[in-house]
Length: 147
Figure 1 (cartoon, rainbow, N blue to C red):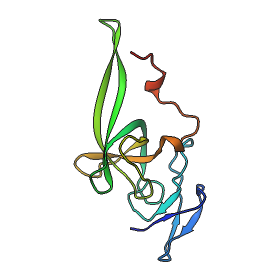
Figure 2 (spheres, helix red, strand yellow):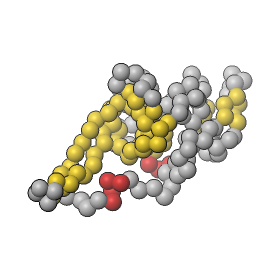
Figure 3 (cartoon, rainbow, N blue to C red):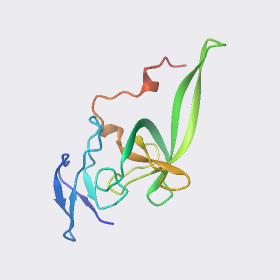
Figure 4 (cartoon, one colour):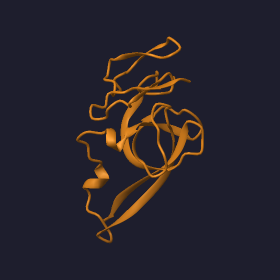
């Protein structure tokens, strides 16, 4: 797989030529507030440059481990209301996600993931961008009162 880092961030619809002569188009994934990554790859399972389609379930998560090739373990935390006790509790779920080669992540990064078709036995989510690449978006769990 080839990854090319560009000097300026490409826009949706731009066509970039890779060093091996292959042309890659930056696709519109249907999420208007997430910017495409600054690098371009020829990974077929990349929502930006490949043919992987996403479903419109988006989560803001924290990267926990990046030990697997093209995959990572992330933690999703949210606040759940318990009406019986009139209180909130924090809940947490660990998930495995696909990381395209054009997006570099490390443990501790805040990323946006989107649901996709099952890619393996345990992976059905893909990273579509870092939190810094998002404009005017606030996750649902950030608007709830904190505990």
